[in-house]
Image 1: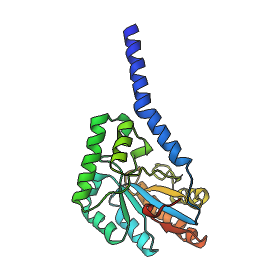
Image 2: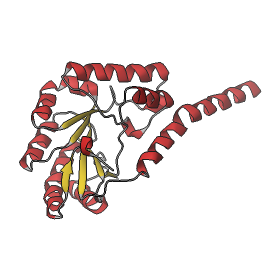
Image 3: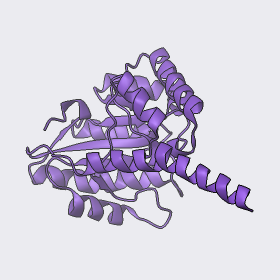
Length: 228
C-alpha cells in the first residue's frame, strides 16, 4: 500500500507541475492582464470550420465585420473551401489544435506532434498561423514552451455565452453577449461542435446582437489588431 500511495503522490505532483499550475498561471496572466481601452470588441470563433460556418460568414459579410477563427486543423482540412472563403472575406485564421484534445492530458511528445501536425496542415491550406488558442484554454509546460519557441501568442477570451449548451437558446446567447461584453473584450463563440446544432443558435443570436452592438458604437476588429 505504501508503494501505491507513493506512486500516486508522485503522479499527482508531476501532473500538478506539468499541467495544472501552468494552465492556471497562463489563464490568470491573460484574464487579469491590461485590456485595450478603445470602444472595440473582438469576435472570435472556436471549434470550426463546420457546415454552419458558411452561414456565419454570410452574416459577417452583411455587416462588413471581420472576425478571428480559431480552427481545428483536421476540420479545416475537411472544409478547404470554407478556409478559402474566410481568406477571401478578410478574416483572420488562427489555430485551435489538431483534433480538439485537452493539453492537460497530453504528454510532451503528443503535445509537440499535435502542434507540428496542425501547423503543417494549415500551411498546406495556404494559411500562415500567427495565433493559438488551446481547447478549453488548458495548457501544459510543453505547449507553453513550444508556443514561445514558435512565437505564437496564446489567446484566450473575456466573454463566453455558453453557446455550446444543449439547453440554451438564441435569446439566451444574445442576452449574455450584450450583458457581459465591455469595451476591449474578446468574445469567444463557436462555429463547430456543440449539441443540438448549437452553432446555428449562435448565428441566430448574432443576428440579434450585432445590430445592437453597432448601435452602441462598438467597432469589431481581429486579434492581430489587439493592442494594449
